[in-house]
Image (cartoon, rainbow, N blue to C red; front, side, top):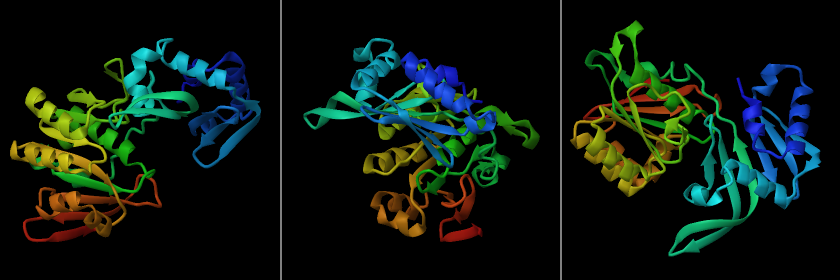
Length: 316
Protein backbone atom coordinates (compact mmCIF):
# COMPACT_ATOMS: atom_id res chain seq x y z
CA UNK A 1 0.00 0.00 0.00
CA UNK A 2 1.30 3.47 -0.90
CA UNK A 3 2.30 5.64 2.05
CA UNK A 4 0.87 8.86 0.64
CA UNK A 5 1.83 10.97 3.66
CA UNK A 6 5.47 9.94 3.24
CA UNK A 7 5.47 11.30 -0.30
CA UNK A 8 3.44 14.45 0.40
CA UNK A 9 5.75 15.42 3.28
CA UNK A 10 8.13 16.87 0.66
CA UNK A 11 5.50 19.29 -0.71
CA UNK A 12 4.48 22.72 0.60
CA UNK A 13 1.42 22.39 2.81
CA UNK A 14 -1.06 23.97 0.37
CA UNK A 15 -0.01 21.57 -2.39
CA UNK A 16 0.07 18.51 -0.14
CA UNK A 17 -3.40 19.28 1.22
CA UNK A 18 -4.89 19.75 -2.24
CA UNK A 19 -3.34 16.53 -3.63
CA UNK A 20 -4.52 14.61 -0.58
CA UNK A 21 -8.02 16.09 -0.92
CA UNK A 22 -8.27 15.21 -4.63
CA UNK A 23 -7.05 11.67 -4.14
CA UNK A 24 -9.30 10.99 -1.17
CA UNK A 25 -12.33 12.14 -3.15
CA UNK A 26 -12.15 8.65 -4.57
CA UNK A 27 -13.02 6.51 -1.56
CA UNK A 28 -11.66 3.38 -3.24
CA UNK A 29 -8.23 2.84 -1.67
CA UNK A 30 -7.29 0.45 -4.49
CA UNK A 31 -7.43 3.34 -6.98
CA UNK A 32 -5.10 5.38 -4.79
CA UNK A 33 -2.64 2.49 -4.92
CA UNK A 34 -2.64 2.75 -8.72
CA UNK A 35 -0.80 6.07 -8.47
CA UNK A 36 2.48 5.88 -10.43
CA UNK A 37 3.74 9.47 -10.79
CA UNK A 38 3.24 12.99 -9.48
CA UNK A 39 4.43 15.45 -12.14
CA UNK A 40 5.45 18.91 -10.91
CA UNK A 41 6.30 21.61 -13.48
CA UNK A 42 7.00 25.29 -12.81
CA UNK A 43 4.07 27.55 -13.74
CA UNK A 44 1.94 24.55 -14.73
CA UNK A 45 -0.67 22.40 -12.96
CA UNK A 46 0.32 19.24 -11.11
CA UNK A 47 -0.57 16.01 -12.90
CA UNK A 48 -1.32 12.74 -11.12
CA UNK A 49 -0.57 9.72 -13.30
CA UNK A 50 -2.32 6.47 -12.47
CA UNK A 51 -1.86 3.09 -14.15
CA UNK A 52 -4.55 3.70 -16.77
CA UNK A 53 -5.32 7.42 -16.59
CA UNK A 54 -4.03 10.80 -15.51
CA UNK A 55 -5.63 13.62 -13.55
CA UNK A 56 -4.72 17.25 -14.24
CA UNK A 57 -5.16 19.43 -11.15
CA UNK A 58 -6.02 22.66 -12.99
CA UNK A 59 -6.49 24.65 -9.78
CA UNK A 60 -3.03 23.69 -8.49
CA UNK A 61 -0.41 25.64 -10.45
CA UNK A 62 3.09 25.42 -8.95
CA UNK A 63 5.44 28.40 -8.84
CA UNK A 64 9.18 28.30 -9.53
CA UNK A 65 9.83 29.06 -5.84
CA UNK A 66 7.66 26.12 -4.79
CA UNK A 67 9.57 23.77 -7.12
CA UNK A 68 12.78 24.89 -5.40
CA UNK A 69 11.16 24.47 -1.98
CA UNK A 70 10.20 20.89 -2.83
CA UNK A 71 13.77 20.20 -3.95
CA UNK A 72 15.08 21.66 -0.68
CA UNK A 73 12.84 19.29 1.29
CA UNK A 74 13.97 16.33 -0.81
CA UNK A 75 17.62 17.22 -0.12
CA UNK A 76 17.08 17.78 3.61
CA UNK A 77 17.88 21.48 3.06
CA UNK A 78 21.35 20.63 1.74
CA UNK A 79 21.20 20.60 -2.05
CA UNK A 80 25.00 20.61 -2.24
CA UNK A 81 25.25 17.22 -0.52
CA UNK A 82 22.94 15.73 -3.19
CA UNK A 83 24.88 17.25 -6.09
CA UNK A 84 26.02 13.93 -7.58
CA UNK A 85 22.49 12.55 -7.62
CA UNK A 86 21.14 15.79 -9.10
CA UNK A 87 23.73 15.59 -11.88
CA UNK A 88 22.50 12.07 -12.62
CA UNK A 89 19.00 13.49 -13.06
CA UNK A 90 17.23 11.89 -10.09
CA UNK A 91 17.22 11.55 -6.31
CA UNK A 92 16.18 8.41 -4.42
CA UNK A 93 13.89 8.94 -1.43
CA UNK A 94 13.19 6.90 1.67
CA UNK A 95 10.74 4.19 0.69
CA UNK A 96 12.42 3.67 -2.68
CA UNK A 97 10.56 6.46 -4.49
CA UNK A 98 12.59 8.43 -7.04
CA UNK A 99 12.36 12.03 -8.13
CA UNK A 100 13.41 12.86 -11.69
CA UNK A 101 14.82 16.35 -12.23
CA UNK A 102 15.03 18.62 -15.29
CA UNK A 103 16.33 22.15 -15.77
CA UNK A 104 19.22 24.04 -17.35
CA UNK A 105 22.20 21.70 -17.63
CA UNK A 106 25.68 22.98 -16.70
CA UNK A 107 28.53 21.06 -18.34
CA UNK A 108 32.31 21.03 -18.03
CA UNK A 109 34.66 18.74 -20.00
CA UNK A 110 31.66 16.89 -21.43
CA UNK A 111 30.37 16.08 -17.94
CA UNK A 112 27.27 17.38 -16.19
CA UNK A 113 28.35 19.42 -13.18
CA UNK A 114 25.00 20.91 -12.16
CA UNK A 115 21.36 21.48 -13.08
CA UNK A 116 20.29 25.09 -12.63
CA UNK A 117 16.81 26.66 -12.73
CA UNK A 118 15.00 23.43 -11.89
CA UNK A 119 11.93 23.27 -14.14
CA UNK A 120 10.32 19.90 -13.44
CA UNK A 121 10.18 17.21 -10.79
CA UNK A 122 8.71 13.78 -11.39
CA UNK A 123 7.89 11.73 -8.28
CA UNK A 124 7.96 8.11 -9.43
CA UNK A 125 6.15 5.96 -6.88
CA UNK A 126 8.04 2.82 -5.89
CA UNK A 127 6.01 -0.38 -5.96
CA UNK A 128 7.24 -3.85 -5.20
CA UNK A 129 5.26 -6.73 -6.67
CA UNK A 130 6.07 -9.85 -4.70
CA UNK A 131 5.79 -12.81 -7.06
CA UNK A 132 6.42 -10.79 -10.23
CA UNK A 133 9.09 -13.30 -11.30
CA UNK A 134 6.99 -16.44 -10.77
CA UNK A 135 6.49 -17.07 -14.50
CA UNK A 136 10.14 -16.63 -15.35
CA UNK A 137 11.68 -18.66 -12.52
CA UNK A 138 11.61 -22.08 -14.17
CA UNK A 139 13.59 -20.77 -17.15
CA UNK A 140 16.26 -19.01 -15.05
CA UNK A 141 16.89 -21.38 -12.13
CA UNK A 142 19.20 -24.37 -12.45
CA UNK A 143 17.78 -26.24 -9.47
CA UNK A 144 19.94 -29.35 -9.91
CA UNK A 145 23.12 -27.30 -9.46
CA UNK A 146 21.53 -24.76 -7.08
CA UNK A 147 22.55 -22.03 -9.49
CA UNK A 148 21.10 -19.99 -12.36
CA UNK A 149 21.48 -20.06 -16.11
CA UNK A 150 23.28 -17.14 -17.74
CA UNK A 151 20.19 -15.22 -18.81
CA UNK A 152 19.40 -12.19 -20.96
CA UNK A 153 15.92 -10.70 -20.52
CA UNK A 154 14.80 -8.61 -23.52
CA UNK A 155 11.96 -6.14 -23.18
CA UNK A 156 10.66 -2.78 -24.44
CA UNK A 157 10.48 -0.04 -21.80
CA UNK A 158 7.50 -0.04 -19.47
CA UNK A 159 6.45 -3.69 -19.47
CA UNK A 160 7.76 -4.68 -16.04
CA UNK A 161 11.27 -6.04 -16.56
CA UNK A 162 12.84 -4.12 -13.66
CA UNK A 163 10.02 -5.16 -11.31
CA UNK A 164 10.48 -8.75 -12.44
CA UNK A 165 14.26 -8.55 -12.05
CA UNK A 166 13.97 -7.18 -8.50
CA UNK A 167 11.70 -10.04 -7.43
CA UNK A 168 14.00 -12.55 -9.14
CA UNK A 169 17.01 -11.22 -7.20
CA UNK A 170 15.07 -11.51 -3.94
CA UNK A 171 14.12 -15.14 -4.54
CA UNK A 172 17.58 -16.23 -5.70
CA UNK A 173 19.12 -14.52 -2.67
CA UNK A 174 16.67 -15.81 -0.05
CA UNK A 175 16.22 -19.28 -1.50
CA UNK A 176 12.99 -21.24 -1.92
CA UNK A 177 12.34 -24.14 0.43
CA UNK A 178 9.39 -25.41 -1.57
CA UNK A 179 11.68 -26.38 -4.46
CA UNK A 180 14.73 -27.14 -2.29
CA UNK A 181 16.64 -24.16 -3.68
CA UNK A 182 19.19 -22.73 -1.27
CA UNK A 183 19.85 -19.00 -1.45
CA UNK A 184 23.07 -17.89 -3.13
CA UNK A 185 25.12 -14.68 -2.99
CA UNK A 186 24.00 -12.07 -5.51
CA UNK A 187 26.02 -9.04 -6.61
CA UNK A 188 23.52 -6.41 -7.76
CA UNK A 189 24.89 -3.55 -9.88
CA UNK A 190 22.16 -0.93 -9.57
CA UNK A 191 23.57 1.92 -11.66
CA UNK A 192 20.45 4.11 -11.55
CA UNK A 193 19.13 2.94 -8.19
CA UNK A 194 15.91 1.52 -9.67
CA UNK A 195 16.17 -2.03 -8.33
CA UNK A 196 17.28 -1.79 -4.70
CA UNK A 197 16.52 1.94 -4.32
CA UNK A 198 19.30 2.60 -1.83
CA UNK A 199 18.67 5.36 0.71
CA UNK A 200 21.67 6.25 2.90
CA UNK A 201 23.19 2.85 2.21
CA UNK A 202 20.09 0.77 2.95
CA UNK A 203 18.01 -0.93 0.21
CA UNK A 204 14.44 0.37 0.36
CA UNK A 205 13.22 -2.57 -1.70
CA UNK A 206 13.43 -6.23 -0.73
CA UNK A 207 16.37 -7.68 -2.66
CA UNK A 208 17.21 -10.62 -0.40
CA UNK A 209 19.42 -11.44 2.57
CA UNK A 210 22.41 -12.56 0.47
CA UNK A 211 22.43 -9.60 -1.91
CA UNK A 212 25.21 -7.01 -2.00
CA UNK A 213 24.45 -3.76 -3.83
CA UNK A 214 26.58 -1.22 -5.66
CA UNK A 215 24.60 1.77 -6.91
CA UNK A 216 25.42 5.01 -8.73
CA UNK A 217 28.30 3.34 -10.54
CA UNK A 218 28.69 2.40 -14.23
CA UNK A 219 27.70 -1.22 -14.70
CA UNK A 220 31.04 -2.34 -16.14
CA UNK A 221 32.98 -0.83 -13.24
CA UNK A 222 30.52 -2.09 -10.65
CA UNK A 223 30.79 -5.65 -11.98
CA UNK A 224 34.56 -5.60 -11.69
CA UNK A 225 34.43 -4.12 -8.18
CA UNK A 226 31.80 -6.62 -7.02
CA UNK A 227 33.72 -9.64 -8.31
CA UNK A 228 36.96 -8.55 -6.67
CA UNK A 229 35.47 -7.58 -3.32
CA UNK A 230 32.37 -9.72 -2.63
CA UNK A 231 32.80 -13.05 -4.50
CA UNK A 232 29.21 -13.30 -5.78
CA UNK A 233 27.79 -16.50 -7.27
CA UNK A 234 25.66 -14.47 -9.66
CA UNK A 235 25.93 -10.91 -11.02
CA UNK A 236 22.76 -8.97 -11.90
CA UNK A 237 22.49 -5.70 -13.86
CA UNK A 238 19.69 -3.87 -15.63
CA UNK A 239 19.94 -2.50 -19.20
CA UNK A 240 23.40 -3.48 -20.42
CA UNK A 241 24.49 -2.41 -23.86
CA UNK A 242 27.93 -0.85 -24.39
CA UNK A 243 31.33 -2.34 -25.10
CA UNK A 244 32.59 -1.97 -21.53
CA UNK A 245 29.51 -3.79 -20.20
CA UNK A 246 30.22 -6.68 -22.57
CA UNK A 247 33.89 -6.84 -21.53
CA UNK A 248 32.87 -6.93 -17.86
CA UNK A 249 30.37 -9.74 -18.51
CA UNK A 250 33.05 -11.74 -20.31
CA UNK A 251 35.34 -11.17 -17.33
CA UNK A 252 32.65 -12.41 -14.93
CA UNK A 253 31.98 -15.55 -16.95
CA UNK A 254 35.72 -16.31 -17.11
CA UNK A 255 35.72 -16.08 -13.29
CA UNK A 256 33.00 -18.75 -13.17
CA UNK A 257 30.24 -16.33 -12.16
CA UNK A 258 26.73 -16.61 -13.56
CA UNK A 259 24.86 -13.55 -14.78
CA UNK A 260 21.32 -12.24 -15.25
CA UNK A 261 21.00 -9.09 -17.34
CA UNK A 262 18.35 -7.10 -19.19
CA UNK A 263 18.42 -5.14 -22.42
CA UNK A 264 15.88 -3.07 -24.36
CA UNK A 265 14.39 -4.69 -27.44
CA UNK A 266 11.36 -6.44 -28.89
CA UNK A 267 12.79 -9.18 -31.09
CA UNK A 268 15.87 -11.10 -32.16
CA UNK A 269 16.29 -8.53 -34.92
CA UNK A 270 16.63 -5.78 -32.30
CA UNK A 271 19.38 -7.78 -30.59
CA UNK A 272 21.26 -8.09 -33.86
CA UNK A 273 21.14 -4.31 -34.32
CA UNK A 274 23.24 -3.85 -31.17
CA UNK A 275 26.71 -5.10 -32.21
CA UNK A 276 27.95 -5.54 -28.64
CA UNK A 277 24.94 -7.53 -27.43
CA UNK A 278 24.98 -9.50 -30.66
CA UNK A 279 28.57 -10.53 -29.91
CA UNK A 280 27.54 -11.88 -26.53
CA UNK A 281 24.65 -13.85 -27.98
CA UNK A 282 26.75 -15.27 -30.81
CA UNK A 283 29.47 -16.34 -28.38
CA UNK A 284 26.86 -18.45 -26.54
CA UNK A 285 27.69 -16.93 -23.18
CA UNK A 286 23.95 -16.76 -22.49
CA UNK A 287 22.08 -20.00 -21.87
CA UNK A 288 18.64 -18.39 -21.94
CA UNK A 289 17.13 -15.53 -23.94
CA UNK A 290 13.77 -14.45 -22.55
CA UNK A 291 11.54 -11.97 -24.42
CA UNK A 292 8.80 -10.24 -22.44
CA UNK A 293 5.45 -9.49 -24.04
CA UNK A 294 5.19 -5.82 -25.03
CA UNK A 295 1.38 -5.87 -24.79
CA UNK A 296 0.95 -7.74 -21.52
CA UNK A 297 2.87 -6.30 -18.58
CA UNK A 298 4.91 -8.92 -16.71
CA UNK A 299 4.15 -11.72 -19.18
CA UNK A 300 6.60 -13.80 -21.25
CA UNK A 301 6.46 -13.86 -25.04
CA UNK A 302 9.29 -16.20 -26.08
CA UNK A 303 12.10 -18.17 -24.43
CA UNK A 304 15.15 -19.54 -26.22
CA UNK A 305 17.54 -22.16 -24.88
CA UNK A 306 21.05 -21.60 -26.25
CA UNK A 307 23.57 -24.36 -26.72
CA UNK A 308 26.91 -24.55 -28.52
CA UNK A 309 25.23 -25.10 -31.88
CA UNK A 310 22.01 -23.17 -32.20
CA UNK A 311 19.00 -21.54 -30.59
CA UNK A 312 16.27 -23.84 -29.35
CA UNK A 313 12.84 -22.27 -29.19
CA UNK A 314 11.33 -23.69 -25.99
CA UNK A 315 8.32 -21.48 -25.35
CA UNK A 316 5.82 -19.80 -27.65
